[in-house]
Amino acid sequence: YRYLLVHVLFASTFLCVEMSGYAHNRRRRQRRSISTTLVTTAVVGYGAYRLAEWLWKSDDDENDPDPEEEGIFSGWESWMSSSSSPMRNSWGQQQQQSPSAPMSQQSSLDPRTQWKLRRQRVFKCREESIKACQTCWPALSEKIEEMTNTSAAMRKLRDLRASKDGHSDDLWKEIYVETLTRFLSSVYTHTLWLSMSTVQIHYVGGRMFRQTPPLEDHEKSMLTASHQYMLQHGLVLLVPIIRKTILPFIDEWKATTTITEIDLHELIRKVQSTIDATFSTQNNKYARNWIRFVLPDDSVDEVWDISRSPVWEDAYGQLLNDTMHTLLVLPENGEEEIAVAKLMAPIKKACPKLSLPQNYQRWIAMPTMLELGDISFQ
Image (cartoon, rainbow, N blue to C red; front, side, top):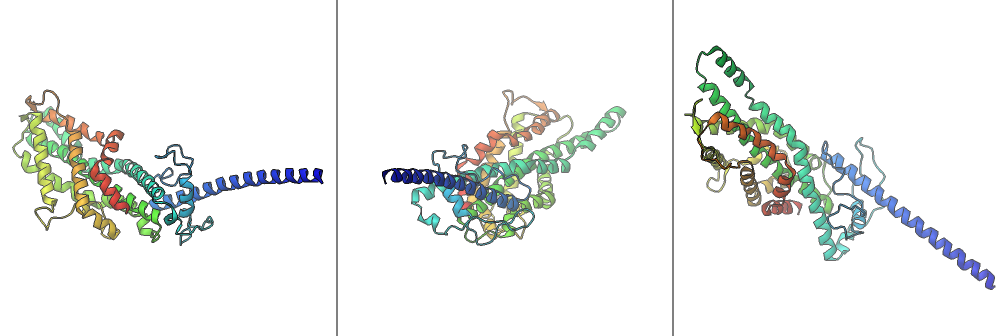
């Protein structure tokens, strides 16, 4: 009996170890399956945008903002897998889902864990807002350059110099106008797009976090729709407004006009104030909202409401002013009188600073931008 009892205990121990290893591997496979399914859903939802590294990583992600919180992602992903509608891949085929977890699973977590889960998701939304802006900005910038092209004026100016006949004032004025229009259009467009990316990604991220009610198709694709709308319609409206606003400020400029760089920066600020006054609702309740340049009429009602709120205006205004301050840097000899033609060169070179990573990190972390993202995530 003693011999038999030893063998039984040994077999039981071996079986427990095997079952434990099987269960551990099964949980790892399940986490991997859930994560893959959620990534596929995100990719389908955001269309052309690269979201493979976004919200739905496994719990062993070493880049997680709270690496010490191991195990939180696992429970969250299990809860996320319980959707009322079947998930589909990019070909429209229905995918196999993991066993449904009760919708009350999140509410059963203690408040501290819920708060950490929410903080992690908001952090990921901020990162993805930067990625979306960086991914979409080149196309918007190229469209602005196309609409403010000075190549024809430069060719005419060279021909005029070669022939030594005629006046070049009108050509130079055209170059001045288009250069300033490109600069200001880039600043306003970039500010609008980063603000709108923040709202839309946080809104969708919050909806996916709560899963009540499930996201609809037009909500999943609204970032793509906004980008296409701004390319095809928004910039066509915005750039002429900025060009028209600039014209009176440089009406007396000629080819030989000289000003200081401080004067040029002050002029740009005055143009900005004039443009802002056209769209400010503080003193003019009938002012038209900036959102018409970036958001289609059939967009999500909640996004429209956020974009018309004082929170949006505060975030957009702070982001716009900081962007201007970042790009308009005065040199040590800023009080020296210089030909306007030479001053246009640093204005042209300022726009690439919009895509510097360190600027994005600072802009997305502004107090008003954090508040905008937090309100959109609710």
